[in-house]
Length: 374
Image 1 (spheres, rainbow, N blue to C red):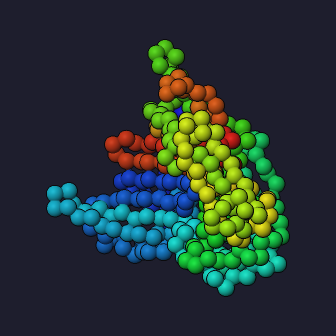
Image 2: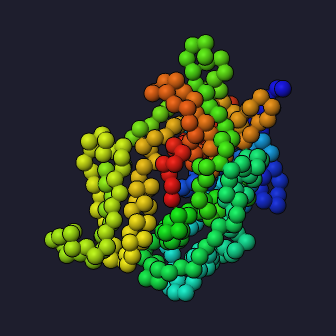
Image 3: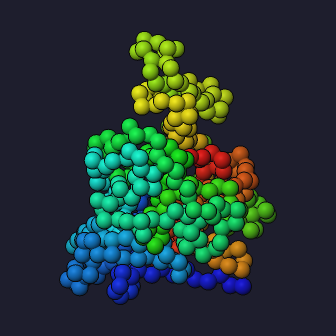
């Protein structure tokens, strides 16, 4: 079978298709709002497009017939050069962009509330309700890739009653930070769904791989399907030990009533001494201390064993089907350089680019299976 040609569609929600772009860049990320940067240009462009690309106007962006993001225009600029003329660029971002900017309401009451209720209360000031959330992470993944998840957690995320009544908003904490802080206590997170909703769940690196990336030398490279790869073993942000303590005298950690620590084996083995100690008077139980230790470790180890893959196209071609690239998926990486590895990696960021110079290309950032556990 012949690999189909990639396509991209940009459409104002409830309006018409926009097809005058000269370049497109779409980024989906499990840790940041999704966004699309669009450029178009010729003489007279601004006058024709000014009302169509007004700030706040909603748009949906699709790749190969599958939604990649739904958001609204957040920025517009029109650089002008006497030699090359004018162009117009606009940036589409999702609902999470507001949440990552706006401060959470300090009057939010969490006493007696479930975690789900806390999430909804926090986002209510932005006009978001329960219908704007997805509590089954696999639904968002399947919507973007078009392939059912095998080995994925398909049950609705259970949000148990919240017991930490003292964990209120800490101004100027943003809505995103406040919600993420509470979700991570239950080993959860939240990110964008392609249809404009917000996913509440946990990245699933236990699912079956959806993609397979090959980069071999010599005759073994006949089946290579990447243009370049980059292996990361970066300890710059990674501690050797994380410790969390509560209720101790300033002069003596040994007096702490509650304390837990965790060593990062790779850093200890490299003989790097870089402990990080946290003091949190809100911690009341060993379980809370252990949870905070794990959160702080997880937030700092994503570069410890990662791959960046640059490939042509916006979809993975398996010889029969073009599967769109998406986050919260798993890829097998088979490379015989940089130490060589064959293994499963969680895709947590996808950046797809279309321009006149390179055509359709994608950059995927992946972290080793089992490394990023909330």
